[in-house]
Image (tube, rainbow, N blue to C red; front, side):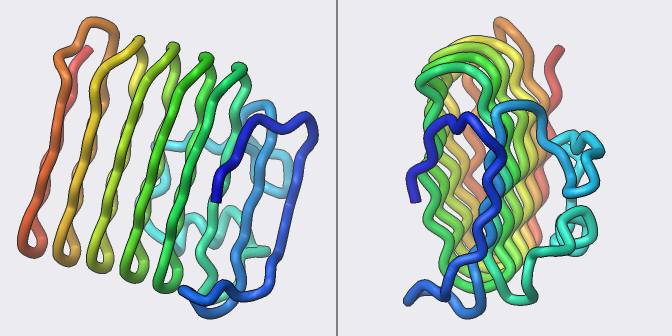
Length: 181
């Protein structure tokens, strides 16, 4: 699925894709991430599928969800989610940010806030119950995350001038936390 900036709020409930069961849920807006009640939703605050489902009650059980806000020009998000109950929550503010995401398994969560310009991210979560969070403020940091196995958790908070941070976890239940300001 390739999502580009939209001019209006769009909510889509689609028929099942061949790689998943249930429905796909996509919400795209040009401003900040909002819940259906209009409350702001900080993207790096959701740490469980239940939290996302509570904030967005229209997400059907078993559905994969993408909740997205992009405000600059040229921002892109490519998402491939197979399995069930995968969640991708993202906000990109600058311009020409590119994010590629593969979540293959069940109940994987990627939440992000990306500010700045021309950032290039690739996040792959293979397995189930992997959670990755990111708040990146800056321009052009190289970024790749691979979590393979089940129940891996990685959280990053980065700021201008940071060195590229790569996280590659193998096995099950490994945790990483990186903070730089």
